[in-house]
Length: 137
Image 1 (tube, rainbow, N blue to C red):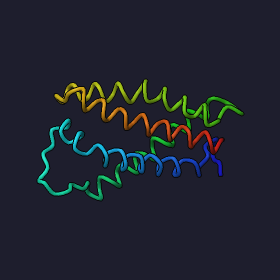
Image 2 (spheres, rainbow, N blue to C red):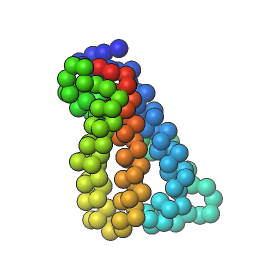
Image 3 (cartoon, rainbow, N blue to C red):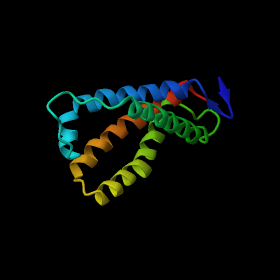
Image 4 (cartoon, rainbow, N blue to C red):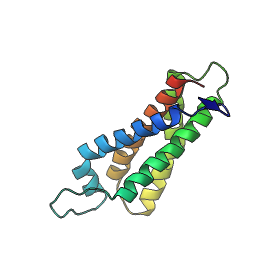
């Protein structure tokens, strides 16, 4: 299912994988992340609002679409799982990590939050790249 060189089936699959990774990752890292983000809980389990969850999924669709576009520019026969993972890594290292790092320094957060968030986005970008590459162009 392709249009304009993008595999439109791979994009929602990649976004859903990214969403699941975020749920599992931040579920496991909740206490560490909340401490690093200077969020105090009320003692009861904190759950993000449905609006935040929908926003996350929509933004992960955007990430998957743009990543697919970048991977597609590798050329015919180059859209593979390996090239997708490599591209996801380069996009993470070149755009996501610097953005997170700059923003969190200005917001007064420590490197612990940057490490936690950056590792999450590394896993997400590797998954998105891998899924897009696996589906091919």
